[in-house]
Image (spheres, rainbow, N blue to C red):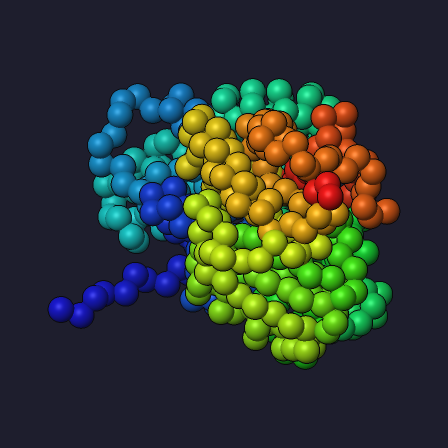
Length: 451
């Protein structure tokens, strides 16, 4: 039987509801689901921007939206399916936070999209709920000022960061995340001028910490930007750039990138060590590793010696030699440092996950430590600010490995020294409050192997 294709969304609001349904009900990643639906719908740029704003805004304050919806329901409605629920959530976000949108336009269009896709009965239900919510609409709706966190996440981050850093992490400078690029074949200023000339409608700003980064909004697909095919830039978030730069790899060194994934940090390390160096990328997923050589060729680094090894470092080293000058472990983690860009993570994580991931990180560190030569460096990074995944893992590792001494001075001038516990914490607290984008929240610990 031929599978019937879902109707293409005709409006930004309908598209946003479809994406929210896919994220909340099917476990899709917001960025991928949104990109796919935008491409399928072929809407105008203004509508694309509105859909993006609604999707990310809804996900960032979803618990608050659900609470408001429940308050106006007179009974549990078993007929409400995923699309109807997503429509209620996205419409409630617009009513509470998007003051430029007229109330009647929000309600009427959302009711119409439910009528078209789910029939008149559910459209009537949605109309009744939204009319009640519209009656309590704030007189001057404003964008949300902070991410809404589950109670256990808020408590975990508060203990790890303290109130000031947590407040900076959760601040909402913009309703949509920026696309971050890394200049590869030319100076950042030259790349910015080239992109600005080609995309005058885009907002393009240098990153505040990484000297290689540019944050872009309203720029479209990065693959369609001038210079992509010629390797002028790569897509890489600023915090990830900083981690690769922070370990300060030198020309000619031997570097191991553990948990390399698709190789974002690998390619930046390749530029640092050059053709005289030696670079290996290790990951459990061989398919991810297969993409790295092509990416090196695209950005003009095909002459850098590279080996890829599909190894599960949580169980062993796969026979790799202990002769590396620097070993970077960008360990798998909860990803809580990325929640401003990936708020859907909050739907999936559980209170036990930070400790569970910390145990996995420690097992990987144990194997990675065996690859470091005497006098070499071992760097451990996680894109999460929790204690269970940063300082607790570092403390356990040091207790087991007295031959590794913490490096307390910064290896790079780009970043400050570590905190008193030896952990360097990267995040929005390192930028000015006027910045519209900030790096993801990372933790980094570096040790030197004693001779």
